[in-house]
Image (tube, rainbow, N blue to C red; front, side, top):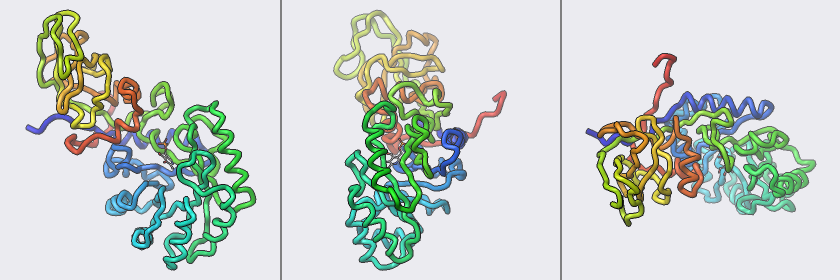
Length: 364
Ligand SMILES: Cc1ncc(COP(=O)(O)O)c(C=O)c1O
């Protein structure tokens, strides 16, 4: 029998979360960010639920190609753009829209000489200092882009470094720099990521870029998606491989990190860092066994974790274990692991099976 370690994907939750984005940004069009295989949720399982988005955004040509192979015809933006002429040819063939974040990409488009896309997104560095052209170059590059073959519209975008912290002074500084750089230029504005969609209505402008919230996860430092009216789009599940009695004073797992304070029951679940469960996670991290909140006890191995079953003394081999998702926010698990939920969902490995889980009907 196949190992029962499964990422259950809830397309109905993705569709619900997209509606929540629209409710929160009623005047804006929605770009659904589906890079990194839909933040680890698998693009093929999520795309049908995103049919109501206005556009999709990915990081790489390969991700865009996967979307086109699935037969999806929504506009797709390459967030990193391209510089290589071979990639420009592929972008033209696949009908992709381009981010232009560097002068070199304008040169590459001019050198390519054929139409690639009628709509280009000029990305401005407003203070994050990752991708984006400098404010002083914006007007010149905007004009040059409009002279390229086939280009009829240049939209204006930027990315915020601290949108999940509404009071951070960088937010206002970035917005001020953006507005100054684009003053007098024609083109729609696109600034807001998930945090800004929920925190900062003033910057919704023409387009919002919704990523993590589509998967039901909060971008904020505290709380969970539930606080924003979101539903988790993934439940990572496994089962108990063993239930063992461990006497007081004995240690559990590699390095003997956890020492049993009393005689106790320890459950062993079939998931480990080989599946993407974080090895950095602390003792006491939450895990659900039979729907009951239990505590991780001992270091995570490649294939297994060990769980204190004090809250679930009837547990037996084969009983269901939830690592995160419905009933256990991935945000809480990420905090126990000293990371962000984005990383946890993105790094599930190929060993884990994925299954789309149809919506439960009332009474199921
Ligand atoms: C340029 C850009 N826009 C939007 C997003 C979406 O961010 P979030 O998932 O926080 O909504 C990302 C994600 O990293 C990004 O890199």
